[in-house]
Every structure is written in C-alpha cells, then in structure tokens.
Length: 180
Image 1 (cartoon, one colour):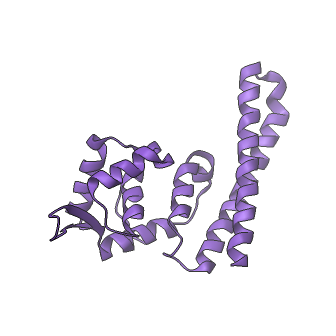
Image 2 (image 1 turned 135 degrees about the vertical axis):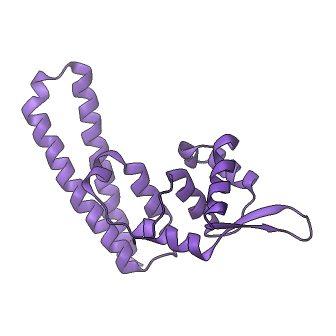
Image 3 (image 1 turned 45 degrees about the vertical axis):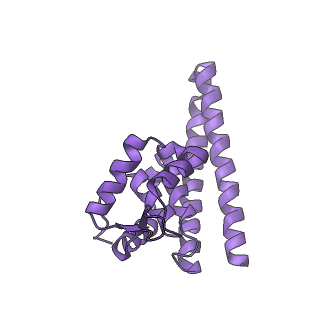
C-alpha cells in the first residue's frame, strides 16, 4: 500500500464515482450537487482542477464519445489500484474520532471492489475502535459532566448519541454483509 498517492477526499470521491462508469465533468458535478457528496464540493472550481490532477497522475483517462464528441472521464487501472489501496488502508483511532466521513466514504465504495472478508474486517475494526472511542467519551463525560456549561454538556451528549447510532449502524451493516 506504499503506492497510495496523497489525494484529497474529493479526489477519492471522484475515483469512487468513476469506478462504476465513465462520467462527464458536468455529471460528476451534478452528482455532488444533488447528493450528500456535496460535502466534498460541488464547485466547478474544485471538481475540474481535481479531475485535471487525477488525469495528470494517470488515475483517470479522458475519453471522447465518437457519436456526440462529448468528453468523459474513466478510472484507469492505476486509479482503480489507488482507490482500492485507500479503501483497504487500516483504520486508525484518530479517523474514528475525527474523520468519520472519510471512513464512511471508503465503506461506500467497497461494494464490488474488495472481497467479503475485507469488508468484514473493515467493519469489525471500525466497530472495535468505535466501542473504545465511545467508552472514552462516556468516561470523560461521567468525570466532567458537572463541570461543563449547559450547551457544552448538551453538545457532548449529542456526540455520544451520534457515536452510539453509528455503532448500531456498523453492527447492522456487519450482519447484512455476513448474511449475503
């Protein structure tokens, strides 16, 4: 996994979209605009430079439809390898604590890219680290709740609740993948 290039989440999101089919720059932008992927940017000022960077790094290829003369981007074998390495990168505690969106993006693009055992391992690791993180949050809360201002306390409770919901989701996802 040493070949994983330093790419942004936007770059990986684009690679993940292109793994299924070639898309025009406009179509990629519309997907970002119309879905939750807009968190990564739907701005043409971000997407087109990202596509250019991916093309320069030979992670995507520009192709032209001979009938319409429209240009599309497709993921290259190197891009697919890079995406797979990123998805299989070991999960670290700091990602569970601060980069949940990245972990969920990695999970979202796993479908046909890796084998079931790798998906299960990802979810089991995610679950275990999330349980540890939740235990740390609860211990801190038990110790410091009375010292927190009301809004801080309520925000902290939201964080615990959100992590509990994510843990429940991970357990359900694990069951679903093992079942299929």
